[in-house]
Length: 191
Ligand SMILES: [Zn+2]
Image: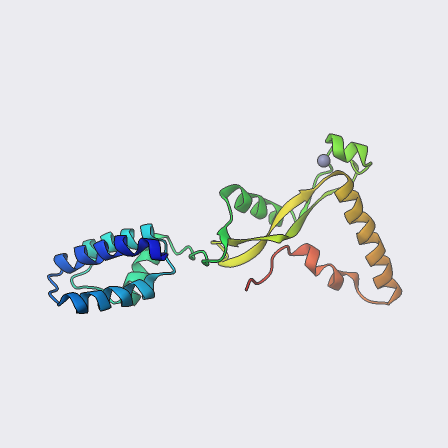
């Protein structure tokens, strides 16, 4: 919720107060609204309203902030809330991430115009993280770099870089797998 949701939130609290027959002075009510608003502000106003409906359906008394949280969480089927400073991954991004992960971030060679022109149409496609675009994955409860499949020249560059790093690593007598962890897991802990 943002400050723009305050009046809507106050309406929700008034409705609950009526339902549970809570009588208090205007000053007390205002303080009470502030406390609950602050406690619940990580949720969207629609989630809070939906949670209030669940409260009325299921609770005998006015809930604590923690109980309200729990009802919202259940209503969202345990999906984690998106942090305020991040956007949520779209349904198609989530599906593509899941597919890429299942494939080991590698797909069949592609013969699109770009891949043919860059002479990479015999090489496996690679799914890579886009570091400057991070979004929240509600299934894993983590911020992830939004990934995409490389094609054409980008794919060619990836293989060239891969070969060069691989050669350097071998020259140092290290195990290449350790270096490519970043490529294998296009996700990282967010802020
Ligand atoms: Zn292609």
